[in-house]
Every structure is written in structure tokens, then in C-alpha cells.
Image 1 (cartoon, rainbow, N blue to C red):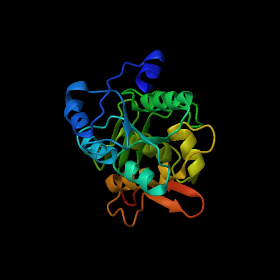
Image 2: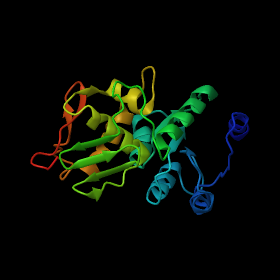
Image 3: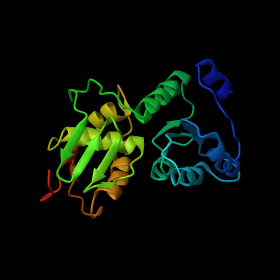
Length: 223
């Protein structure tokens, strides 16, 4: 049983086998992280993710027996930060959990990613304070999830530089080997919804076709 394995790794767990019940329980439990199976009775995992993400920025990792694009993307678009396809190795899942918890920590520490000790970034109208875990555009809170915040920070810390999807998977998600580029693509789409004036025609987080993405400070905004 997964809960027993996780408890042996030092995690405290609460198990719920019904989607509707999970949504009801969430406010009273206030977990640090959610492992969410796509296949749940009552309310499927994608719908549960939408409900929880509407009320909280808690990290969500989807567990799915399916690895096709539709199921993966649906989970990520619903608000999941990462996914693990069954069957999986427990060591891999534990590593993902620890990585997500590190990103979600209220006071993030600078990691050795070639970005030095940069903690505060002001680029155009976008201001990011890593120590306080705040991000604003023209003084308005962007209300980012921990994963969206980390993605924006990494892009802005390398302003004007093109970062490949592989580099972003390593710097943001902590992948040391090949990962799923869909994680990057979907999170960039979600981030654009909050950062861009017109997400359909992005100017701040630009796509460099065939390579990746780059951060371009808003034109005409005060630094």
C-alpha cells in the first residue's frame, strides 16, 4: 500500500478513496502536498484538481495508469504541478514529492543553478521577491502557484536568454535526466494567463520555436 511505503519514508499520510470526499476533507486537513489518482469514484482526479486549485496553491502530483497526451495534459491544465505514470518506482515518486515540497517552501533558498544569489528581480513592471515568495505585475499580485512562481523566477533571472525545455525541466522541476516537455508547455500556458495582457499573443514569455522560451520585460514599463 502506497501510504505505508510513504510513511516508512517519514511522511504523514491521510488516505481518501473518493473524489467528492477528498474535496470535502481538504479544508480540514490542509496537506503540504496531494498525490491525486486520476481514476477516482465520485469525482475523477482531474475534477478534484480543479476544485482544489481553485481554493489553494498546494502542490499536486497526479498518479495515472495512462500516459497518453490527453490524460496528462488534462491533469496539468486542471492545476497539477507534476505527474507520475503507473507503474512507477517508489524512489522516483519520493524524489518527486521532495522536489515539489522544496519548491513550495514559503522561504525558498537560492539553489546553485548558475543564477548566483539573486533573490529579488525587477524587470519592467514585473517584480519577483524569492525570499518573500511574491510576484507582482505593475503592483498587482499575480497569485502564482509555487511551481508557476519558480518557473517565472527562473525565466526572469535569465531575462533575454533562451532556455530550452530541458533546461527548464532541470532548473524548475529538478529532473536530472530527460523529462516530459509537456510539463513545461502546459505550465507556460498557465503562467501566461496570469502574466500576459493578452495570453493569446504573449510578449513577456516568448516562444522560441524549436528551442524553448525566454523572458522579455514588458515594453515601456518602469524598471
